[in-house]
Length: 301
Image (cartoon, rainbow, N blue to C red; front, side, top):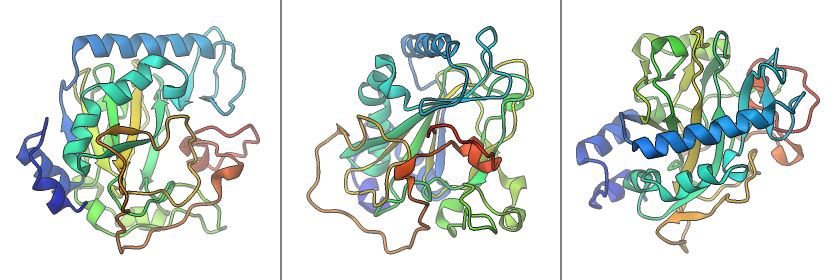
């Protein structure tokens, strides 16, 4: 569906003004969108997974560990596909208000694509350089969007995600380096052209949601505070958006319809999209790629 098609449908959760803001700017912040019950359940699920990570000593297909991680003092960069590892995460991704919000932005038929839990650990949690998501997992159209969930209050010192307003309607950038290696971020020359003074950093209280379109230029600074900033990220798409490369974050729930029903016609956007490497042999993580780490562990994003 086109944005005009979506806007012609009466929304279930969002206001028309919020939808128009999203289509114009490419992102949306919804403060305190979740109930206290969901916040507590997501926190507990996250604590359960952190406890499990104490038994892990190196990054693998599930865990991306930060330098200094130990059983006594875990330091995590990412949990890959959290929906596959704890039932609360999938219940949230499929049965909470979140898919209803997504339907207000992509149309009534919504499918799940993948998820990750980025921890942004206290006192040094890594930056995420300016990048665009869709190059990692191209689709036949640009409806895919990412919903970020703040389980705890997030302020400006914790490295909140920053958006470049309107950049979703601009060009897609090459996210390979000069050696032809995928690094998953804008080249320095391209990043220098971005007006970062316009960046809108989305911080808010626990239970807030961030939403951004797959073409959006976005990133985040390191977390230099003494408080962690776990950010649960779920990616959805309109059911008429078909992936045409291997999913770098395979999940048993990938392509599952979470609202509406399957469709019979694919929608094709005529704008081209950069192709990523062949992820079928595995994937590290955006942190490892952007830092150009020489990591030979199993795939994990």
